[in-house]
Structure formats: C-alpha cells, structure tokens
Image (tube, rainbow, N blue to C red):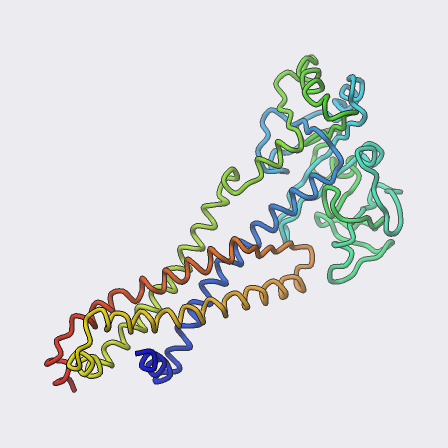
Length: 367
C-alpha cells in the first residue's frame, strides 16, 4: 500500500507539486501575517518599556493604541507632575502615527526631560541643536540607505538633519523636538502622553493617588508600564485577532480547495485501480487509508516547504524593510503546521469516501 501511495504521487508529478505548493503557501500566509503583527506589537512593547518611565499619564479620551488620540493635554502639566513627592522626572511627548509610505510611530520629545527618564546612549552625534534636527536609532540608521550624523532625512514630508544616532529601544526610532512636532501637527504646547519616573517602584500607587488628587487631573487615566504592557496583547487590541483569523481562514480555504480538487481528480483517474484493489480483498478503510496517506505526504512536504519559505520571507523583509520586526515563534509554527495538516486531510475526506464507495464490478468495467 505504501508503494502504491508513492507511485500515485509520482504518476502525476505536476499535480503533486501544485498540491504541495498550495499547502506551503497556506503555511507561509499564516506565519507571515502572524510574524508581522506579533513582531510590530512586541517591538513597540520593548521600545515603550525602554523609555525608562514607570508611569504613563493619558488624556481622558485616550485609546489602547499609541498615537491615535492626538495631543489634547497641555504640556505644562509636566511642571505640575515634577513638583509631586516621589516624582523624579516627567516628560511630555507628542506621538504621531505616520502612515505615509510605511507605518511608524514618531515621537516629539522635550530632550532634557525625556533623557532624564533614562539617558540616551549615543553611537554618534548628540542632542538636538536646531528645531529641525532629529535623533534616530541604530536600526533606522542601518536601514537602506544607511544614515549618518549630518545626513538629511524626511520625516512627515519635511527635511530634518540627523543630529544623533542612539542605541535602539528608547521609545521611537525617530525623535524630533516636541515644539517642532507641535507646529507640524497643530499641537503647539500640547502632549499626547506624559512619561513619569518615580524614586521607588514601591511608591507607584502613592504617586497615582497624588496625581488624581491634583485639581484638573482627577479623571486622567494613569497606567504603570507593566499595566500597559499587559494590555498590548492580540486579545485586547481591536481588529488584531480579526485580521489574523481572516488571513488564516483564506489560507485554509485555498489549501482545502486545491487538495480537494487534486484528490477528487486522482480518484476519478484511478477508478480501475480501486476496483482491482477491492476485488483482491481491500476493505473500504484500506481505500480511505490510501487516499489519506497520500494527502498526508503532500501535507508534510507542503508544511516543511512552507516553514522554510516563511524564513525566506523573513530574510527578504529584513532586507527590504530593515526596521520591521518579523517574529516566527515555535508556537505559531506549531499552529501553522496543525492548521495546514488538518485542512489538507479535510479536503481529502470526500474523495476518500467516494473512492471507498465504488463498486468493484463497476470499477473493473470502467474505461
């Protein structure tokens, strides 16, 4: 029976290759969309955690997603926060979600107070020297084309001179002066969020209470960095799981239909062979087993090719989009394998059932 399975696959090599490719594409689609989404999410979590802040003060209309709430708060709130007991630094930031060309979150920062949260580690250059200076991280600087101190870079369709290159992991990959960001976005003297550093993590709740006891700040949401990180999960981000489920569903349908068509055609072509097997005593389960084993081999080959192809996509994206974080985890590899394998077997069930029901006399008389 095993020899028959391999012979069937080799008898129509083009059809077998197309079936393998269909399963591989299914796996690549699943791993790629998960890799991009999870990579972007975890990269943002790492960079926000790297600001050095302990608390974040948001406007009352803020969303889970950074940069979508504008800059409704007065930047002068930072002066009020710095006077509170246990607060060692407070920095206003304007966050701008830029979707021109690629999606990126740009920070407008007050350099002195933002550096006080956790000092920048400069690889080259230094702080802002002029309103249209920018600081970029080393990952952005090593993108294509490579950037150096003194080079000009376009941010939000405006040229900026790179004044410094820093180690990655501190907020955004591109930072500009908060006053300049305010002018460009119509938010002069405003802020999207305040990053707050306290003298001791044991005083986080005390600082939170002090802020809420301050006149005018009673209703402003305050999150610790740990609380914010806990909200940045696929289940709590609107549309995240919907997008993953949609792409996964499309991939499963593609794989299912190709396997179904391939095995259905194969059964029709092998009507006489099935009749011979049944006349020799093969049971219905034996016939079903042949079809499903053939499908399993196609699925295994397709899944293997799909995993290799996904790493190929990762290398390609790393070359084309160096700042994009693409994560292929063992968990998603396992899910992709399972989804593709089950989808392929489901696509072969009806052809296998049809083959098992064939009457041996009719099959032997088939021309």
